[in-house]
Image (tube, rainbow, N blue to C red):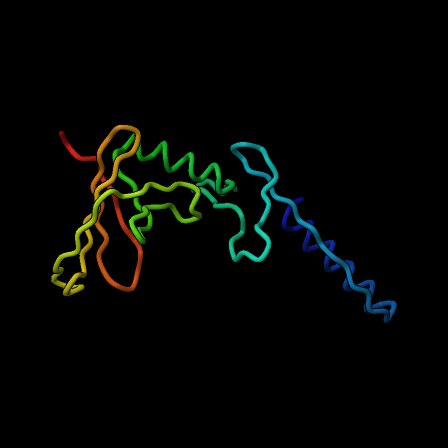
Amino acid sequence: MEKRRITGVVSELIYNNLKTKQMKTFELEITETCTVCKKEIIREEGGCGTGYAIDNNGNKICYACCGEADKKTLLETGKLSGYYSHLVFTNWPGSFKIKAYYSRDSWHNFAGRNGRTDFWLNFEGKHYHGVHIGHDNECATIRLLKK
């Protein structure tokens, strides 16, 4: 259902309720479909996420397909931006994870003492190096190591 149509239906229901001076409650259920796998996108109960991401073309993609897209990007380009915490590098929804086998903290000119964390990981037989800078975030980037 299109956004304008949903707005029109809601407006019509509100107008009809005001016109008859009756207050009625109604539920509006919107189902989304992943444009990649064509499955219904289900939002996790009690979660704060939408259950989908939106690509550059405005297509809605479920979290599982986001993980597959991030994996493909990493293998094709040799680099990926994501999040690093407790020896785990992950994408935003957590549908793509790689465990680091070693990390080291060091000085950084902006973040100060232990402000830079270097970490190393293996993924599908290839070795990657990641860098995380700062104490107030989890943003990190990993890159394929040259042999």
